Length: 105
Image (cartoon, rainbow, N blue to C red; front, side):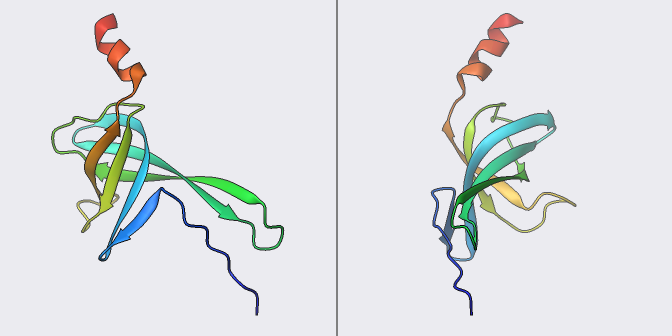
């Protein structure tokens, strides 16, 4: 039987049964909803090369505090809508892009 090699990354950690992921905010165009892109790295089963893949998650942002380019931590939660299954836990790092945008207006 083939051995599966799962690499542990800093993007996901398991706390109880609620998974947390760290990713970049790609869209804030919806009200109280952000789109977070998480980059996952896995070793290819046959060739053992690191393969990167991106996945988008819809997360609930109650205060509309996250901006495009921010690095955020999201936590898995019960379904809030058709696509939203994540909650914004905290903003890890603010983007320098998002600070320049309000000053330009």
